[in-house]
Structure formats: C-alpha cells, structure tokens
Image (cartoon, rainbow, N blue to C red; front, side):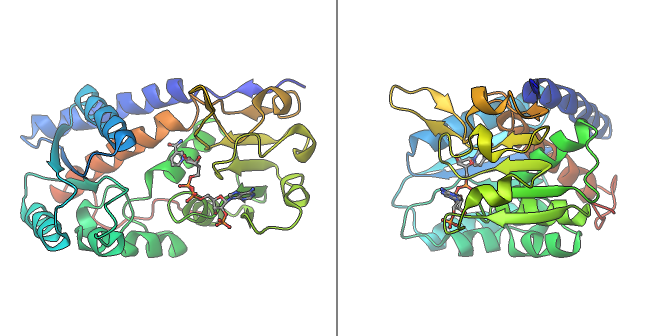
Length: 294
Ligand code: NAP
C-alpha cells in the first residue's frame, strides 16, 4: 500500500477562498476584519511566524497590525495595552505571539485577552469550552487538523484515534475535539509505556511530539490515516515532522507531509477565527454556537 499524500497547501488554499469571500462580504457592509498581533522581544522564530501571518491576512482581506515591544516590556504595561485593544471596536482579533520573556506570566496575558477576541483560542474560557463542545475559538493547530480530516471526508464516529503529545495547544484540545465527534481517543505522552501498543490500534494517528522519526512503520496499522503535526529542524536545517514519512507512507492509506501538511492549516484557522470574530462582533454570526456538533 502507498498512502495518498494529503495536500495541506491545497486544502488551505481552498479554505482561504471561502474566508476571503466572507471578509469581502463584511467589507461591503463597511466592516474591515482586523487582527492585532503583539510581539515581545526578538525571538527569530516568532518574527518568521508573525511575518507569515501578516502576509496571509493581506491575501484574504484581513487588516493586520503588529505591535513590537522590547524584551524589557513590563507585564503591567503589556496587560494595559491588551485592555485597550479589548475596548477598541476596530480590532476583532488579538494575538500575543508566544514565547514571552520569562518575567511575564503567559497565563495572565492570555487571561486578559477578551474572550470575544481570543482568536488563538488560548483563553481559559475557550479551552474549557472544548470540554462541552461550545468553544468560541478553537485553537488553530488542532482546528486545522480537524479541518483536514473533515476536508478528506473522514468520518470520525467510532474510530480509534491515537494522539501522541498532550500539550495544551495541540494534543489535549485536539483530543477533546475528536472526542466530541465520537471518536475513541487515546492520548500518549513522553511517559507512556510502550507507545506502539497505542499507535498500532489507531485508525487515525495524530503525532505532535516534536521528536523526529518518533513514529516508524511497524508502529502503524496497515491502512491508517497519519497526521504529522511535528516541526523539527535537523542538523543542516532540513525541516521534518515526527513521522518517518518514507517508511510509514508504504503502510498508511493517507498521510500528511512536513512541510505542506498541517502547517499551512494553522495559519488558515487563525484567519478563519479572525473573520468569525468580526462576523460575531457585527451581528453577522451568532455569538454562541456549537462548532463541533455531534
Ligand atoms: P510540546 O509542548 O513540547 O509538547 C510535546 C508533547 O509530546 C508532550 O505532551 C510530550 O510529553 C510529548 N512527547 C515528547 N516526546 C515524546 C515521546 N518520545 N513519546 C511520546 N510523547 C512524547 O510541543 P507542542 O507545542 O505540542 O508541539 C508539538 C510539535 O508540533 C512540535 O514539533 C511543534 O513544533 C509542532 N507544532 C506544529 C504546528 C504546526 O502548525 N504544524 C503548530 C504547533 C506545534 P510530556 O507531556 O510527557 O512531556
């Protein structure tokens, strides 16, 4: 068996066409969807991520602003800036790029962003809402994985899903989303004993551990769908995921590549959340809705 390669770039392009149409509709009603990003310090990876987000916003008709602050910004000053943005009707989404300098509490910062503008989906309300399927903004990477599965027409009901990685931004929220769709979900982490006994059971295997080649072919069920969230840079700079792509593609039925799989969907779901925020703020969309109905 050779797996079909899931083209995340093509799916992202298609989803973005719909987002651009919604942004254009809002503009025709004099609403310009707007995202403000805050970057503190000069982390190189953050600079690249933010540049990509600015470009993506421009492509679909979302106005983006970047507030760049020096690493000695105080927590109080940052919180005050966020509170001002919370009150600004011209700003629909607020994103604070992580990581933050160690003297600033990530939890306090994320908790200060208004729930209605929390387009990264990291506010406790949005995280907690995932438990009952009523999150306003799902976090972008798991939302992107969910969208890929939906786009591929994969029915999740009753499927065995194994999620490798249980971070607050990827593994845990994704597991909750998939459970909401009535999949049977196993969550594995670094302390899981005999990882393969869980991965081999998976009809759908999602890997978000940040460990190159963590998953090799003998750990994968024949015909499984494999979604690789990992982003790792090998010595020499080559980008790779968490899955041994060449080995696993001979056993899986579908697989996402790295790059070109989940990555483009993460930014796309940020655009989706920002347009949804503008739609809700201006009454074009209900404020409360179930995003993952069973
Ligand atoms: P993280 O916070 O470091 O979490 C990694 C998770 O993987 C942890 O739960 C950890 O277990 C688990 N893990 C580590 N080694 C393992 C092993 N050998 N076996 C089983 N589980 C293991 O990372 P993250 O933020 O979730 O990101 C995960 C990966 O996805 C990274 O490569 C990151 O760059 C990538 N990522 C990609 C996107 C995208 O857009 N494509 C977005 C976000 C993240 P413990 O909890 O026990 O330590």
